[in-house]
Length: 314
Image (cartoon, rainbow, N blue to C red; front, top):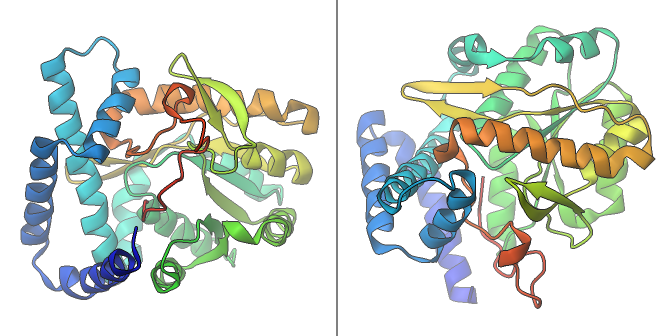
């Protein structure tokens, strides 16, 4: 993206956080849905990549069914952005009240908290993970556990846009570390987990070229080893989860915890995360917002991570 394009993106996001929350919710969501439908008709690069990824999730889908799934997926992605622009003004207690009954599989997490263990959540790009994080922050606040949640963000361009996203997530109660800080960020995550904290990592795309080769929906892909390594190093509970939408709210199913007794089990544990993602995503594929290359067959030799363009993604 050119310097002018980066500045335009920064101004666009600034306008979104300022103006979208001022619109009536139904009007804002309707506008974003129209934009999604337009993107589906135009079939630009993002829509084409989403289609290729979803074809792996639902290999039996007819071309017509896949068209509809892509449209639903773009609408889901648009809903994420609409909610993201409105989220700082939403009531955390109301979010907790609405989401809490649709959180499933969390019993091992509560047990880990009772034992003083940290928890690593491995998430795909799905649903509204920021809102799921707000639910976790509110839950831990009610338990008297603070600071509540630490996450890692890829540094976007321009720097002002990155700072804007950091400020946004900090306003939700998250501690945000820059992925590019490398070992310093890793040490901070380790410290938080050893103190019994919560770390949430988006884990369905490797950005380092040093991830673990896994089978995802039956095809080779690379996922980051960080979640499993942190669990092995700190004894934290490792839980794959899949934030997703319901027609009028949100749900948060959690998979069975992944055992990582030591570093020798990191690769096996990362494959278990891939297996959990495959199961969870297949239950609501439209909410998987993967508009980038993730499968090994799609990655070019000159860009093995698929990160040639840094984009603002959930």
